[in-house]
Image 1: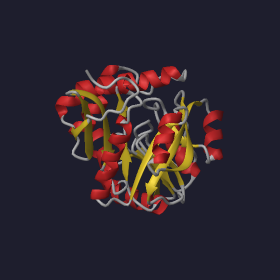
Image 2: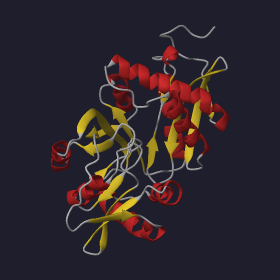
Image 3: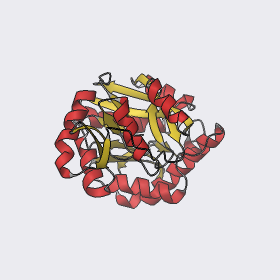
Image 4: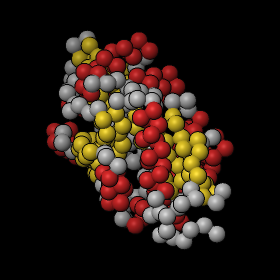
Length: 295
C-alpha cells in the first residue's frame, strides 16, 4: 500500500519516459487537467483522453523533447516534459495523478527537468501556468521562476480578414533564416527547431510580408504554437488569416492592450488567464508575439 493521501511520496522513482508510457501518462494528463479545471469551474485544457494520449505520445517519441515519468510502488503517477528544440527550453505538461496530489510529486518532477536544463547549460527555462491554479503558481515561484506577464487565452470564430499591405502566405524552408533572425531581434533567441517542425512536419507555419520583407511568422495559430512579429499590425494579419484557432485558443499577452482589444472587437473571447514564468535568460520582447503553452 502506498503512502496515505497528504503524506510525502518518499519512495518515488523517476525514470526517463518511453513510448510505452504514453497510454498511462496520457490518461493521467487528462484526469489531472480535468479535475483541476472542474474544481475552478473552467473548461478542461485537454478535451478528451484520446487527445491527451496523442499529445503525450508525441512528446515521448519526438527527439527534441525530454520526458520524465514518476512511479510509486511500481505504478506511474505522473510525468513532465522539456521542449529542447530551441536554445531556451519550455516546461510541460507536468501532470500528477489526482490520487497522489499534494505529496511532492510535482516538485520532484520539476526538479528533474530543471536539473536536466542545468546539465545542458541552457540559458533559460520558461513555462505557462493557469492563473486560477494557486498551488502550481506557488510551486513554480518557490522553485525560482519569476512572473513575467499575464496571457489571455482567446478563442472564437475565424476573423478571415485581410490587413492592407500585409500579405500572409504559407511558410517554406526558404523562410527559416528570416524567421529565426526575426525571433532573435524580438526575443534575443530563436526558436528554429519549432519553426522547422511547423514548416517541414506539420505544414502549419505562415509568414506575413510587408513592403517585400518577412515581418512576422506563426508556427500555427493555436495553443501549442507561437508567433513573432515586428509590429502588432503584422501579428493581427497573421491572426486574421487563420481558418481556426487550435485547441483552447491563442495566447495573447495582456500587456499588449491594442492586440487584446482588437481580438475582443473581432469576436474573440477570453477563456482563461495564464502566467508566463521564467528562469534565466529573459529579454523584454522588442516586438509583438504570441507564446505557445510551452512558452
